[in-house]
Length: 49
Image (cartoon, rainbow, N blue to C red; front, side, top):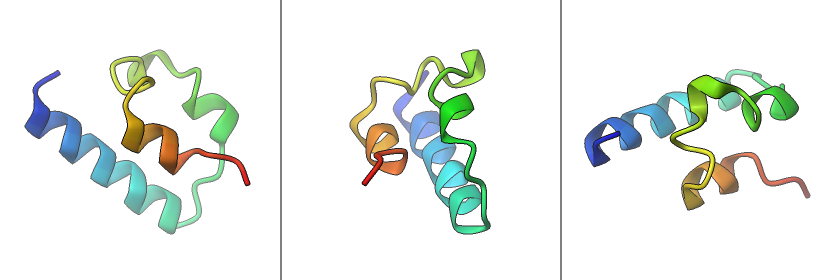
């Protein structure tokens, strides 16, 4: 995935979380997000307290 696409995908995920998305378990296993799973910003979005 290109850097621009990665940034856009992460921004959309951030907005989804702010809107109430909370299925962290699925997001971290979802094959559609596989290209983001190791990204530090993705990991921060779904970090557990």
